Length: 305
Length: 326
Image (cartoon, rainbow over all chains, first blue to last red; front, side, top):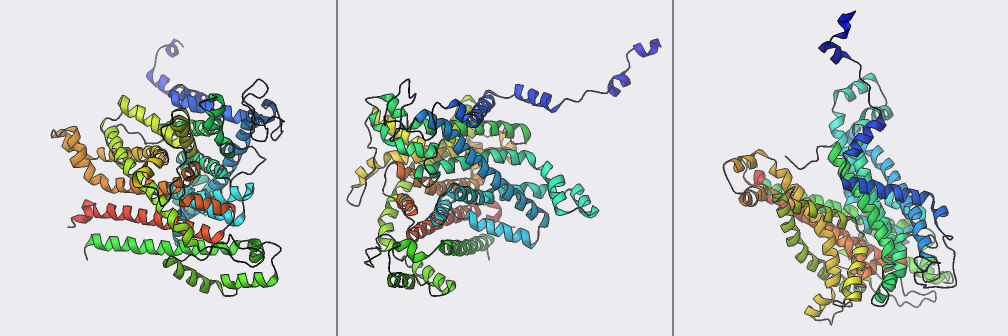
């Protein structure tokens, strides 16, 4: 029996190790993450919380009007009121909900369309692939914002047309990426085996291809989200995006832009219209930092050689 | 035929094809306009005769393919029809030809874009090459974070920040770029300085990052390793060995960003009230003046396609493998 107490190399190697849970692995990754990634994560989590609990955090209602229009910063209205007397701090909070929510929904739809067609094209590789790829080439030959503007002038700008138009136009980019990364996976033996086994298109897409192309797609989701978010903000800024009375960061900048000229007299008034724009910038910076770190971690996209 | 020539011709044919399909999309978009066309434009109080005359003028009594041929044919000669605005229910027609609205603004926009390109391209190439040269140094890391931040900012944020500092707090430049035909060259440059500055800040970041990435992926190739091992200086490795092979990717980067410039111009023109084609397009989208929107979209799309075509051609012409066939 004492035999077992002594050290044995085979014993140590053969010992069953505890598998780390997904949370433990995540924590280890996070501990080694650079400061910029931590910063990005904090920003994104804060925005999500603000968007979810907007009615609880905001002191007033989204479109509630007060008799004092153009009020400056005070204890009652932290960031003053806008041209028709709505509390700017409140609208900033609700803006998180509207702007981020719509951008997220749009990106999601665009990924559903883009990824499914991209996978189908990669699997099919015959006339369907040719047709889809050439159609996407043509659609991508028109600059995105310009195409969106043209379609909005025809269908009119409501929240739903906005979401659908941007999602469809953006899905062309998602299609390209998905098709490109899955072409490397489609030629693998296990995909061939699944095909020979008689699995359907849905199975091959979901069970064979998707898990293998997930990391680049997740990174792409972050980048596309930034792009969609900036596009929607730009459209709202131009007055053809999210329509009043819904609070939205892009249109808030436009409505209050004239305050900037009062900077020499009262700096707080002048930076009020810049706050929503800064909110947009901060979120995009945060997401970009996370994506940067994620890409660095998951793929061979490192520059040092 | 020389492989370079045949490839270039092939690309050009592809460009013309793309242009054809794009014009088809832009033309057919008008078909999706919901409801009665005449009533939508002329208002509900328009009489039946006015509406019928309007439909006839647009050629709505003809089949779509004939209308396309007519529209595309006149668009080639610069005639985009007449604007919808200025038409009243009474039948009095005060509308103007689209080309009259577009032409002067097109020149303004090209002036702004050209000025930006002249500042941005050399700056971006310089920054891209130096960051690739001193990669992972403090300089590189600072530039990396700075450009990532600039990329993330919406164009209008950069514009208003510049207005806040350079016109409101320290009045150096005018905040409104009110140029017209009579503006002199130097005062035009002075007035367009802030819009050009905004666009430069936005696109330099992209261009620099892409140039750096293109160079770095080249620097990993064995022949660069060889050059280093035989003792070529760092500068010469980049300028004499890497750069000749990088012109293709860099040309793509530049064309891509000039094409981005075409789009970025829209927002910046609104911020600085610059009378360019982007501003016209946004105004027409708001008032749903479809012929003007179509003309603007076509102009933007053509510019975009031509820029990409030029990048392709530069990539082909500077490709050593095609230049020296076996």
